[in-house]
Image 1 (cartoon, one colour):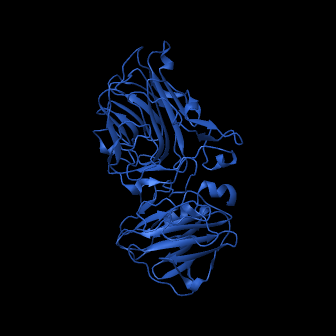
Image 2 (tube, rainbow, N blue to C red):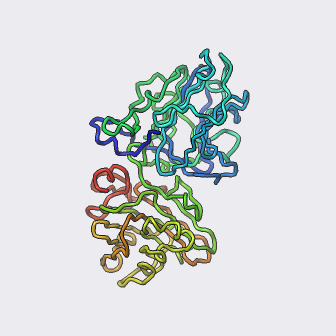
Image 3 (tube, rainbow, N blue to C red):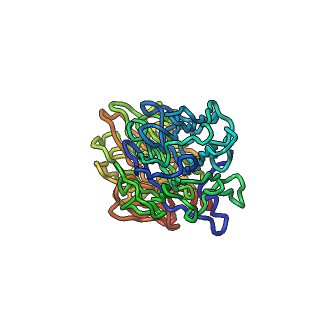
Length: 451
């Protein structure tokens, strides 16, 4: 299957750039009431970065487009993609499983019951390739009217009567086309230099039809804006902080919940430990070269045992089972000390309080790390050597605390409000404090040149 590594498209001159996505989670969704349109022929497209790899919701279902009172849903269930019309029991379910929580998928499907051949009435593409293998399929009868483009509720991020099945993750470039059965080539193209990479194209010139809409999420004060000029979508539990710069053309690292020790929310940027237990969480991207910066906000009231740091990727499994990152070969700022491979580092360290922001400057070129507390360098500015080589990632942990801790990880795409917005020297990321000179946000555009 074709795949997407955001930023690989930077090798092509004039490639279309997606500026923003919207982060969904909890009971968050957008909706609008449809008007009378073409119920026989329509197309839906979205760029999707899912946050849940398995059955972490009550039902294991993540709906990214739903119409009516559960009448038609397009969803991950939990790892397959399913398009299903509950009224008629028409739909398709993929054989392929989509488990990656670190990458963007472009999901395009059209519905066209005017087709004489049953198998042509629902078509699906993922990252530019048509999916033809299904574990289940039942195609609508010729000229069947779906519920889409009728005068019912149309939702991005769920369906209107079940909050437990809402989508968790990020979405970008969301389009509903009323009256046309389009293919994936209307929404993306293969990169001319890396022909297995699927990348977005400008969709603003498409004909969206009577009931269609286009959400580009570029207005933080109106994320439900229809960029095509139609009626805006209503927003429920959506805030300005849900706008993110993590997009299919610049993919930012998040936390990896494939090592599922604790809770992961806000598009895998917020981690919470379990009460009275140890555990860790790690970034999805590891690096072996370059200089990288991240910030972590201590958002929970429990600060004893709260730690942030860096850890070798090859030790992630042991870390999840064994507790704090420093005990398994990492470097960790915890309480009023820094631990390196389980031993105390020297120097002046300030204890961590609630709402403190800890900056982590990871220098893989020289195999060392520095920590900053609210922009004040710790350890007297002394760098701490990494105890081993290989690929390293950012981490957070809860070590021997009596209550659950919580960390909001800012890899340049924060889930919390900033009092200032500082980017790295390449212009990427949003941080509370300016990254040290030469240090970059851990995103695919920076990896393309500095990783």
